[in-house]
Amino acid sequence: MKHRIQVSRTDRNASLPRALGAASLCLLASVALTACSDGGKKKSGLAPVTQTAEVEPNDLLGSAFALGNISRSSNLVATGDIDGLGADQYDAYQLTITENASLKLAVEPSASNSDVDLWVASADGTVQMRFESGTAGATEQGTYAATKGETLYVVVLAFDADTSYELSVAGS
Ligand SMILES: [Ca+2]
Ligand SMILES: [Ca+2]
Picture 1: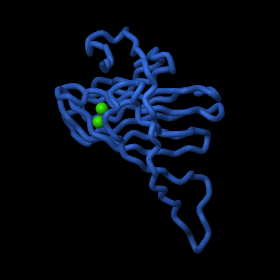
Picture 2: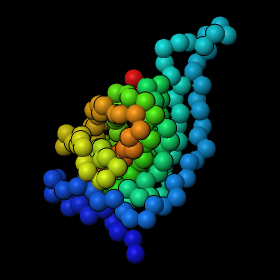
Picture 3: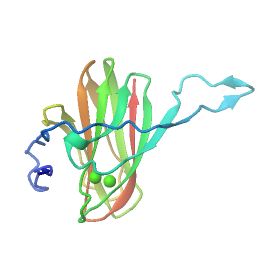
């Protein structure tokens, strides 16, 4: 029996219980977008963006989509779809932290009437941070100080209206 994340949308103080039974985590082949070149020389300063797309089911922390190893030089974008009222209420992503890093996290909805939220949970399912301005169409973003060896979960959810979105994770 699968357990959905037992969090009422009106109960912001609840934690996300970690699903028992570790589901195998599949790492998708990512498409690396190389940095623009300039006269044959790569521009420095910006890490190449690695772009990937969510794979369902990812509604539980135990079945979170693995974004893989995250370091200070990571620059990832994951694209997905989330329902405001439908069946796809949570998109969970797992991050494996390989060095101490400041993570800039952001989720940008494509639908101007969709209020997306971004939660950060630790390995035991405790919600550590919530980025939720409550504004439809707004990008939710914030920073999280990640520790080497830590497993993190980033959860995207939405209110009222379905939307596609871009989730970005940038280390520094
Ligand atoms: Ca989804
Ligand atoms: Ca989902």
